[in-house]
Image (cartoon, rainbow, N blue to C red):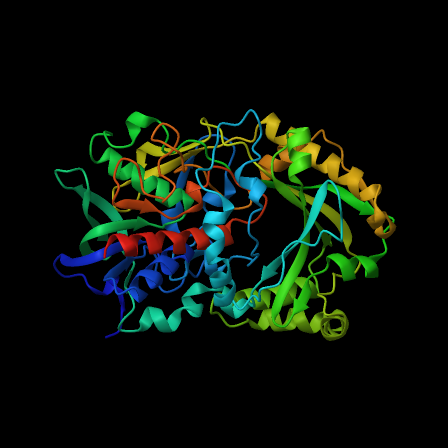
Length: 519
């Protein structure tokens, strides 16, 4: 039996299913959860609001009501289809440092009820899935003292899309039953307060109702939050609203080019900070503030990376676009081929660098910009809510996003920039160039205009009790224990690295917990 079905092709009477687990969302967290539970012999249904692929860069169901600074990740950073965001994400894989769970700014209201050790048992499994190899992530010999040099691992493009990487298990008879174009719209609870069933609809009129013992919401940070808010509103705001935590503490990583590398030695820089190749895996260098520096200066986590940028697109950009289309299961266009042809001189040198230097060649005449990525403070006033006046095509309230970049966020980014410039310019790496910080006058505007870098979190935060979090250390909601949320929305702070690898490990851990519970 083919286990992927499309609700848009089933416009008849309401279809009713029974499952051990309903997973809402077929993106990174949802697919890993569903496959893990299916391997454990559980009857799993997955409901995905998108189709096989998302052709455009924005999906109509991602419309939100913006109330403050424009959060660009609300529309451009979310993808509804089989594989979800994995059909577009860059691919950087890097675990948090242990300090990201404990060294939190003194004036922030945040805590982690788990440690890195709770998730690390799943690290090797994630590495094997993406064929990453088991090499180290930290390279203290490159830069010592205030900043730690780390190399992220990037899987080859064909493996980044989980819909492709897990294709055989998704489609097998023992795999989960996946329903596409199935948007969750109604939540029904039993007299004990447990979630009993969820109804999914599609624009063509199809209706799917799933009763299950356990429910996993894995629909991305913004949508997972909205679904819990919808469930609450449909039941008189009596479930989560009294605690006042759900929807608050919204944050993202903030990023901007805040310094420039001058007096450079481009070839030596390319050998150090250019993407390197280890087999088919790529790696890139970034620098994270040490736990000692963060504690001493009371600054947030984050990382610094150096990029070669040009004013006009060239061969580097053309090559990247071709690979991105392959990741989305699309064929390169004639325009892509022409762009590569025009860049043939650079492409010839890039091939030499790829196989001799084992590095990705920077664009010609690149300016080396120092990008500073920092955690944003998780403030209760930065929040996701429900609109009182606008609804989607199913009559459900749109999400509202009240998000601002505050002066403290900008000050934190500047402090990280200054500390990095001090460490670089006084150390051995000074021979490759000198870091010259940009003027700080427009930092807040630049950070706000960036709209975040699509690493949203905080709005379904973990906590030690119901007054400090929406979910517990096992990702179960305090108020409805048979609902768990697997999303970066549960991360109380943003950490010092891209959160995707941590999300994958959290998904596997949660799936194992559910499997044990259902025995």
